[in-house]
Every structure is written in structure tokens, then in C-alpha cells.
Length: 281
Ligand SMILES: Nc1ncnc2c1ncn2[C@@H]1O[C@H](COP(=O)(O)OP(=O)(O)OP(=O)(O)O)[C@@H](O)[C@H]1O
Image 1 (tube, protein in one colour):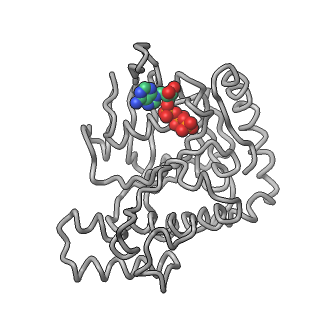
Image 2: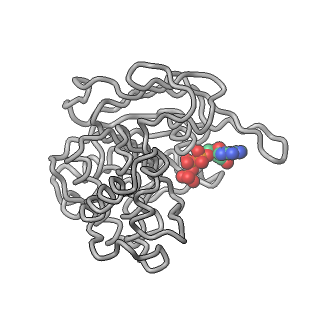
């Protein structure tokens, strides 16, 4: 079922990324087969901010990993700009849940890491890193090490590192999960600002409905495992948005209630397993 909250569709933009009938099965260590996602098809439009939401274990990260080429699906196709892609695609920048900063490297070196791997000269990559550090508000911390930074600052460094390689598509898998609510909202606002300025296509995975609605143009609800697209919602909230204020928009509560009614069914199903989802951040 596809639910549409507003009539403003992104379909005027071209399809940037497409999943066609993706099915993924894992073999677990106890010898069982786990059907993680089942026959998922999804189009993501150029410059769209899309959020995938669903209970824990429903296959959100699996879908992201398939799109990023980190996992090969049992069947189905991934298309980027209309071309079938196999393996890791350089058009994608990936920010995962895990803190992946190099502990022995400074903020500058962490930000510049991807540029170094791409063979960009030291002078050029330092200049680019410096510019990004200003942009993410960490001026003065260029030569600090990760252990000298707060959780939120580390996330900013990770954002800068992903932006440094200038990907056309940004994947963010519950990037701010463990942070406190205020820091999370500030970083979400930063992401909205970056998206507004760069117009990158963003695929954002979360189990937080409030986060999904505040950020995205479209929320895609994944059913509890095996993951399938249960519903899609275009989010008719004004932009530019501020995540701290958008919850007070007259339409926000209606949107949240509509999605929550569907999501709740998955939470109840997931209770038999390990499903977890939060309605409000
Ligand atoms: N490498 C793997 N080996 C075996 N099973 C796996 C593997 N990766 C994922 N799974 C299983 O596939 C299912 C989907 O996992 P996935 O990580 O995609 O869920 P998710 O929706 O991202 O969950 P969460 O919100 O908790 O991060 C789960 O049942 C998980 O146990």
C-alpha cells in the first residue's frame, strides 16, 4: 500500500537510484537462513531526501548496504543513474552508526582521509579539509585528536570526511543514534543545511519517526522482517526547515499520526522479535 500525504511529488526529478526486486537472505551462524528483505523495489529521485523507517531488524541497513554495493543481493538489481551497478559505487558516501574516525589521526587528517585514498596532493587535501572544518563549525580543532572531542564533534568530523569526497549520494545509517536530544537536533539541522546547499541525494535510515518526518521529503516505511516497502509518505512540510520548530507546524501532528498508525502495526509484530522504534525523539 502506498499512502500519499501531500500531492507535491518528486517525480519531476530523474531517478537517481533504484532498487528492483531486491531479496537478501543471510546464513546465520546456527545454520538457519534469515530472509532479511523480500522483493523490495524503490526509486530515489535526484536531490531527494528520503528516510527509511522501520523496527529494529527489519532490514533497513541491509537495503542500504545492498545499494552501496557492500552486500550482494540474492536477486534483483541496483541502478544508479539508470545503469546497473555491481560492487562499491564511488558516487555514494556512507556514514554509518559506528564511530569510524582514526584515533591516531588529527581532525585534519581524518577529514582528508578519503582524499588521500583518491591520490589528491597533500597541499590540496589540507586546503579542502580546512574549508570543510570551517563549514562544520570546528575551527580551532584542526589538530585535535578524536579522544579530545565530544560525541557531537566526532560526528561533525565524520560528516566532513564524507563530504570531502563530494559524493553525489549520501547514505546515513542512524548517524546520530547515541547522542543526546539537543546535540542530535543541532546535527540534524546541519544535515538539512548541507543538503539545502549541496542538493545531494540523501538516503537516511532511522527508527525515529520524528527524525524521519523532520528531515525527509519522503518517508518509506519498511515492514518488520522480512523487510518490504509497506507504505510511502510524501512529507508536505515547508522548507527550509528547522528541526526544533518543525514539530509545531500545524500539519506535523497529522503526518506523525498517519504514519504512526501504520508503524505501530509493525512494532506490535516486532514485539515477538526484537522490534524497537521510537515515535518521538
Ligand atoms: N551478516 C549477517 N548475517 C546474518 N544475519 C544478518 C546479517 N546482517 C543482518 N542480518 C539479519 O538480517 C536482518 C536485518 O538486519 P538489518 O541490520 O538490516 O536490520 P535494521 O533494520 O537495520 O536493524 P537496526 O534498526 O536494529 O539497525 C536481521 O534479522 C539481522 O539479524
